[in-house]
Length: 103
Image (cartoon, rainbow, N blue to C red; front, side, top):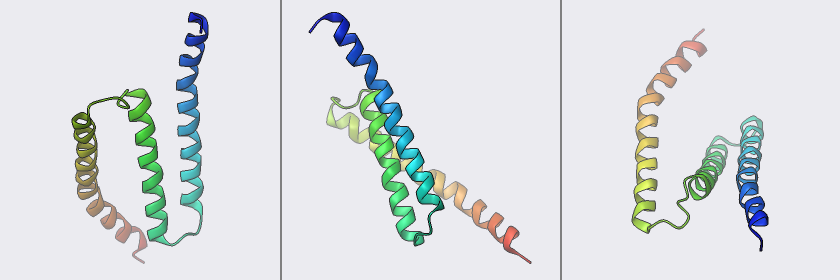
């Protein structure tokens, strides 16, 4: 394989990743607007978000071939940050929902 063809292949990878991320985002928007049971909707959206994280971490951050300890640190930090954001945002969201739905 010549040097030029390797550059072409490697430069196409970010575009493929971006296209996959865009497709997953459109799928998430379609699921959010579909009339699914709440638990199924949350589960499906969470799985799609995790797929996006895996694509970004594997390709953009080059964690695909990283040491397992680094991967577990990344995943653990991601989960801790998610829980922290939920704990901080959920009470305010419930308060706003009560304000909006109050007659």
